[in-house]
Length: 266
Picture 1 (tube, rainbow, N blue to C red):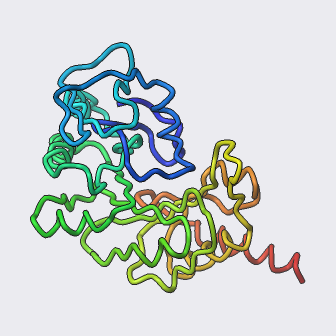
Picture 2 (picture 1 turned 180 degrees about the vertical axis):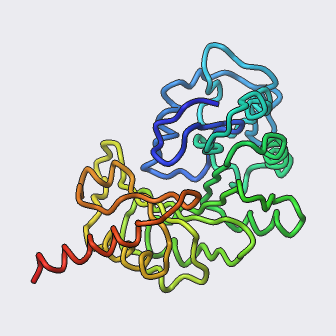
Picture 3 (picture 1 turned 60 degrees about the horizontal axis):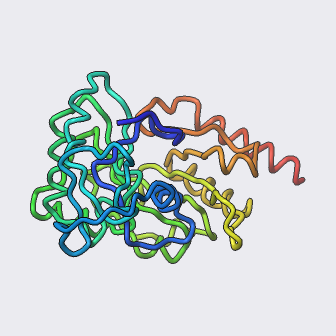
């Protein structure tokens, strides 16, 4: 596990790396390709790689191809002080191509180190339900299951109806307006962020998109975390909130923020 620059986590842990979604804005793919050693893996099956020990030359010997780093599975146990851990920041652990055995190994490793809080993020949340139906998805308070919701079309695809697990939406990058009232199930937390990098068709978020989501979340008592890359466009956004921390005073801050904006408009 390593310290991370991701605002809403303290550590990142990547027992699995690589992804096949092919998102043009993906920072993880850019990073992996930069350190791609181009090694040949004769034991790979279906483009899936397993590393039993660390290759010192690079953390991404097969680029952004799906890879299980089995030697990393004991890292949470070795970190005794509890941390907020983003699991598989360099992969989609719940992607369709990921073997269930890999997911089981990662979740088992998490349960062996309950001192940490684990955050997962996927573009395939249907896999959460599949795993839950066969009793493989942990329901502990320290497990948070997230879905990437970049625009309104994505929101319609990602209903999260389970009341007995912690859920969140990561709207990063925010690529368009999202009417959260149209969703079949609401998350318990929302992360808002902007696209990073220098892509030619990079999407710059609009203030009305952000305000619409913020107002809905305030009305429904859903805490929101505003990433620094979004604050770079809108420095006057309300204070960020983490769902596992006390939100005392946050509602008052948001109310004051919107009242101030309303008074300025009048």
